[in-house]
Every structure is written in C-alpha cells, then in structure tokens.
Amino acid sequence: MRQRSLIAVTAALAAGALTLTACGSRDDKGGSTADGGDTTVVIGVDAPLTGDLSALGLGIKNSADLAAKQANEKKYVKGVTFKIQALDDQAQASSGQQNATKLTADKDVLGVVGPLNSSVSESMQKVFDDAKLVQISPANTSPSLSQGPKWATGDKVRTYKSYFRTATTDAIQGPFAAQYLFNKAGKKNVFIIDDKKTYGAGLAGTFKGEFTKLGGKVVGEGHIDPDSTDFGAIVTQVKSSGADVVYYGGEYPAAGPLSKQIKASGANIPLIGGDGIYDKKYVELAGAGAAGDLATSVGAPVESLPSAKDFVANYAKAGYKEPFAAYGGYSYDSAWAIIEAVKATVDANNGKLPADARAKVLAAVQGVSFDGVTGKVSFDEFGDATNKQLTVYKVEGTEWKSVESGTLGG
Image (cartoon, rainbow, N blue to C red; front, side):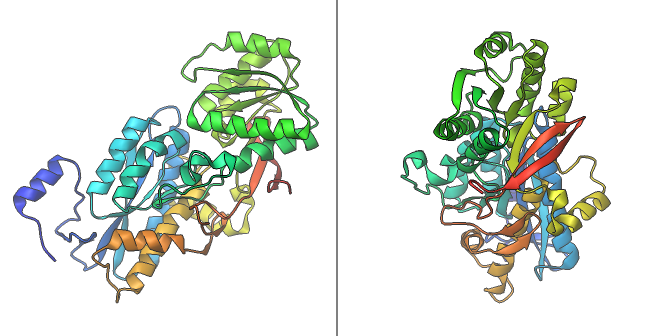
C-alpha cells in the first residue's frame, strides 16, 4: 500500500473529499486499512436529510446503515468493514451533483445508494458513470433514467451503465393506477395535475395514456408550483370540471394541502398519486378530508412480506428515531446489492480488493441475484429492477392501508 503524503492528506481533508479510519492507511485502489487489518469500504448515501422530504430521506439513510451494520456483524465479506457516508441533497439537483462529485473523489466509496428524486438523479448520473461508481436508487421511478429520453417510443437506450434501481418505474406505476381506478374503483372522469418536475410530470403522463386507452375521460389538466401554498385557481377548475377523481403527479408536501383545499371547496372527490405521496406526512397535511385518498407505491407492503420480518424487527432493535418509511426495504436491498457485489469482487481476487475495484464492483452488480427484504433482487439489461410489483393504498383514519397488490395488467 502507498500512503499519501501529509500535504496531500491535509489538502484532501480541506476539500472534504477524504474519509479516514482512525490510525489507518489508505490505498489508491479504494478502501482504507484499519488497525484490525480489515479494509474499510464506504457506501455513499444521497437523500434529502433535511427539508420537506426528509421523512423519506432519513428512512433511506437509516435502512442503508442497517445493511452495513448487519454485514459487519455477520462478517459477510471477509476482511472488509462497511461504513456509510450520508450526504444531504435537500431534494435539489445542484446539491445532488455536488454530492456526487464529493463521493467520487473519495476512493473508499465503492457504491452509492440514492437519491430519492429522479430530478436529482439526472444531475448525478454522468458524474458517477465517468468514475465507474455504481449507483443504486431505491426510489427513482422516471423511466428515462435507465432507458433514455425516447423510451416511450420504444427506442430504449441505456445511457449510463453505472445506474441501477430497486424500485419499479413510472412506465408501470402510472398505468397500474389507471387500471385500478377505471376497472376496480369505477372512476371514469379524471382531472390531472402535476408539479412540472421530472417525476411528477412523467408519472402523470403515463397515467393519462393508460386511463384514456381504457376509455376514461380527462376532464381537465393543470400544473401547480409545489412551493406554493395556495392552490385556489386550480381547485376552482377541479370543482367545475365534473371530475370524480383527481390524479396528482408530485410529492406529498404539495399533494397534502392540495387535497385539503379540494375538499374544502366542496368537491368531495378523492385524490390519488404515486409513491411520492405515500407517507404519513401526506395524511397529516391533508387533514381529516384525506380519508379515501389513494396512492400507489412500489412493491408489496414491507410489513406483509415474510422476507421483511427480520428487517422490520432489526430496524426497530437498532433504535433509529425515524421510521423506515416508503423506501426502507428498497434502500436496504440497494445497499445489500452493493455488499454482494463487493463480496463477489473480493472472492474473485483472492480475498482482496483489486486495483480497479470500482469497475469490478460495478460489473458485479449487474449479475447480483438474491432474496432481499422486498423479494427477489436482480436487474435487467437496463439496470431496472426485475421485481415489478406495486400496491394501491387508501387513507383510512390517520393511516395508509393497503387495498390491492399486483403487477400491471395482473
């Protein structure tokens, strides 16, 4: 191993780009060696840890942290100790790009879990790909991230081979919601609203395509500023449109107040959204009128899966202050996919990390296949999750209750 000079280390620390293990040395191939002889591998986490979406982001961070702790307790990868480095992107693309640059500058980082937002991921992908640093999001659902901007026309191209996700995409989630509303809930007239962001607009678009294909009618469409608190203008349009349901593409900080104002106007119709509104915070923001509102979210309810029982128990035992929220199981599985890839890389190199550890770990992720918290974890040729299951939830009282789980067309 080649230790850096004191000057170089001081400069790296000043730049915030170096993570040191106490009394350890560092190797340019990636990984630090601590006194105990183990190599420290860092798994980066990028998520909104402060701000309106922190309820989801903190669940992502904690769940990835739990995976690292359990891998260390089990000594799952001989000679390797895993560590989490979590960075706050505040749900802002510019912050995400800065975080991506910081994580790639630290050679100990061999994989990244996150981010939450598809728009943030857009700003990070090239940075990670240039560095051959694997990124696995537990929450991104925009199809273009993995299949390119022309995916909807059938021209699917994987732009960044470093990008993976354990969540399914809006190409499935939007139509799944449309099928439920039209075929099961009997809703025929919808007013569609989105926040004009990558996630929200994309989700609303895929919903609209399937709903109209089924024979449903779009009686109105509009956009809102998610940073606003007064949605009076569009609420008036909804009330006079004859809609029997509102579909919202966006996240809970705006969706909750929007639903509340729709109900206050006298339009007693449900609002339905995607996984971006599936959080307890939505129910709090929407108030008592939220009863009957709906959301789709990726996968089956974690608490109902036999494969997730240990995760739920271990998360509680670990004492995290925040709930694992909508993406906890997917975050744990994302981190564990990186751990599995590190193990495969070490095992193939006589028990040590190779000089090109990042490239080898990236290649290994493409082939991982294991039984995770959320079910079978593996990736297709685009880096998308092979698990396509989704669930519809309804607000009952002050809680989200699962209504139906399944796959598109199933």
